Image 1 (cartoon, rainbow, N blue to C red):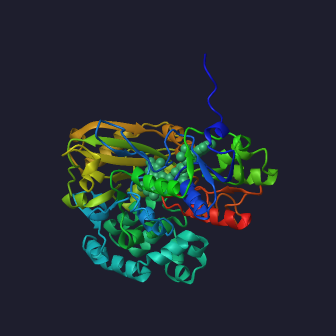
Image 2 (cartoon, protein in one colour):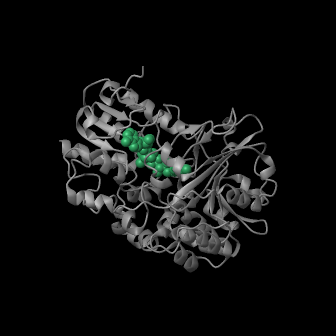
Image 3 (cartoon, rainbow, N blue to C red):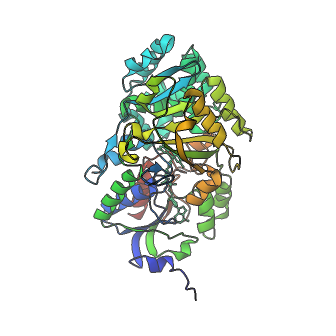
Length: 485
Ligand SMILES: Cc1cc2nc3c(=O)[nH]c(=O)nc-3n(C[C@H](O)[C@H](O)[C@H](O)COP(=O)(O)OP(=O)(O)OC[C@H]3O[C@@H](n4cnc5c(N)ncnc54)[C@H](O)[C@@H]3O)c2cc1C
C-alpha cells in the first residue's frame, strides 16, 4: 500500500511564520538571512532534495571528483555587497583565487591572460595593451561604484560616475565597443569572450555592460572559487541562516500558494512562469498578461570531465587562469552567438571553461583533474553539442581528448529538471535583452513587489539579474520589510 507524500504544511516545523521563501538559491537564502536578521521566523521551501539552487556541487563523473553542477566561478559572490557583510569565513567559506582570473586562447598558440594587475594584463595584449590600460584606468576599477550599480542597476544609467565613465560605454553593443576600443584580433576577441557570458548576440545594445562589469571585477576582486566546490558558499550561507533561527525544508515543491503555512510575507525565488502557475489565481489579469510577456533567453549545454591530467594548452600560460573563454576572434564568437539567436548552432561554439583543480586540488584524487565547460544553444534545444565542445577544447589543447577519463552531459532539458527556474535551459532567469536587463520581471517602480499584498519576487528574474550574488534576494527582502512595517 502506498501512502501519500507529506504535505508542505506537514513538512514544516510550524504552522505560522513571519515569512515563507519559495526556493533555496543564493537569492532565496539571501532574502531569508535579511529577514531572519530582523528577528523574523523564516522557512525556505526547496523543491529539490538538496538546497542551494544554482550553486551546488556533486559527484557527476567518477568517485572522488567534485563537480560544480551549475555556477562555478564567483566574482559576483566575493564582490557581493551583501555577502561581504556576512561572517561566511566563520561558517566554513574559503575563497581560492587562481593565479590569473581568466584567459583566452587564439589560433597559432597565442593567448591573452587577464591578470589581477592591469599592466600585467596589457603585456599579453601586445599593440592593444595601451588601449586596455586607458580603458581600465578611465573606469578606475572601483568596485564600490560597480557594487552601487549592482545594488540598484538603475544607477548604471543615472549615477554620475556611471553616466560619465561606465554607463555610456555600457549602453553600446559589445561588437561596437570592441571595434571602437581595440585594433587587434586579440583585444577585440578578449572583449567578445567576456561579453558572451550574457548569452546575447554581440550586436545587442548594452551587451558591453556585461563585459565591463565582469572585466572590472577581474581586477577589483578576482574570479575566485569556493574551496571544495561551489556548494561550500551555500553551506556557509545556510549555516549562518540556521544560526539566526531559520528553517529549510527540502523536497518541498510548491505548486500553489494555498499549500503554504500561514505567513505575513511570501518571497519567491522563482521566475515569472512559475509565479503564474503558483499564484495565478490571485494575480490581477493585467499583471498576469505582463508576466506572460516575459522572455526567456538562450539555453546552456553543459559538460563536466574527470581528467587524467591538466588540460595540455598549446599556450602554456593559460594554465595560470581559473576560467578560459574559448572561441578565438570577435568574428567567430559573434557568429556563434548570433546563430543561437536565429535558432541554430555552429560547430565552433563559444565555450566557457573552468579548470578548478589546478588551484583547488581537493576536488579530485591526487594528480587528477576536473573540467567544467558549457556552450550556449537555443532555448529548449535538443542538439547534442558534446562533440563540438570537445573539438573546441582540443583545437587549443591538442591531446585533451586522450586525457578524458569520464564525462557528464547536462542538456537544457536536464537543467530544467534539476532546477525549475532554468526554463528551457535558460540559466539567467530570463533573457538579458535591454528591455529586461534593467526592468525585470516587469516595468514597475518596485519590480520585486507583485500586486498581491505580501507577495514578492526575489529571484534573478529581478534586478540586478543573474549570478551568485544574492542581491536580488537582499533587495526584495528590504522592500518586503518596508511593506510589512
Ligand atoms: C550551468 C550554469 C553555470 C553557471 N555559472 C555561473 C557562474 O560561474 N557564476 C555565477 O555567478 N553564476 C553562474 N550561474 C548562474 C547562477 O547559478 C544563477 O544566476 C543563480 O543561482 C540565481 O540564483 P537564484 O537564487 O535567483 O535562483 P536559483 O539558484 O536558480 O534557485 C532557485 C531555487 O528555487 C527552487 N524552486 C524552483 N521552483 C520551485 C518551487 N515551485 N517550489 C520550491 N522550490 C522551487 C529551485 O529548485 C532552486 O533551488 C550558472 C548557472 C548554471 C546553470
